[in-house]
Amino acid sequence: MRKVRLISVVFIVASVLIFAILVLNQSSHGEISRRKSANINAKSYRDCKVAEKIVFLKTHKCASSTVQNVILRHAKRRNLTVALPATGNYLGRYKPFHTSMLYGTPWAEADFDVFCLHTIWNGDQVRRLMKAPARKGVKFFSILRDPVELFRSLWDYAELETYFRVSLEDYAKNAGVNQAPFFRGINIIGIPCIDVITTPPVLFRSL
Image (cartoon, rainbow, N blue to C red):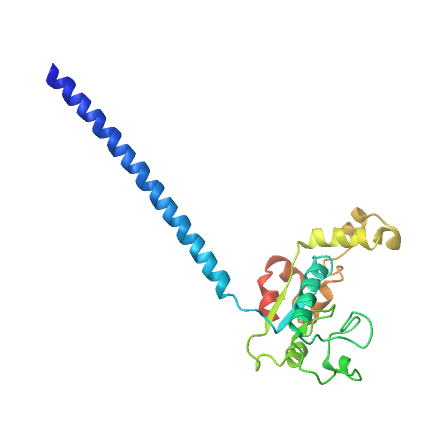
């Protein structure tokens, strides 16, 4: 009987010790993983290189003015040259961008670092202006937003219900998919709007 109790006690103690070892080992591995992750993140941050050749396709009602503001502050701090029109804040408001839109400005022949104003996208002409891909390191990016949310935001911002004299619901029932103004640039580069809605990466491949 004593042997049975002794064996039971030994078994219980051994089980507790094994359990404790497993828990401590798992905790140790978790801590090591967290430290490795922190080291990787820190290393990645240190290895980041400041972009000084930037093309931002600005899109309406997608927080693009906030991003543009960050880019312009970055350009000012780094003394970068921003592509600007003679007046206004558009580089192609009613037709696709063309380098000729800068003709007549004192900076027409400048070596531009940043392109970030409102435009109707023309990839070939933007690349020509920025000397890409001959110039390495030019970063191209934009912002996409759910088309329904975007149009609702635009509808309220521009007070289109007053302009069209119809409710948003009635307008949606009678309007085609090509109505949103921001799609103008997408149509210019030859991508049907329905393709952009279903396969957004196509847009980025075409930039």
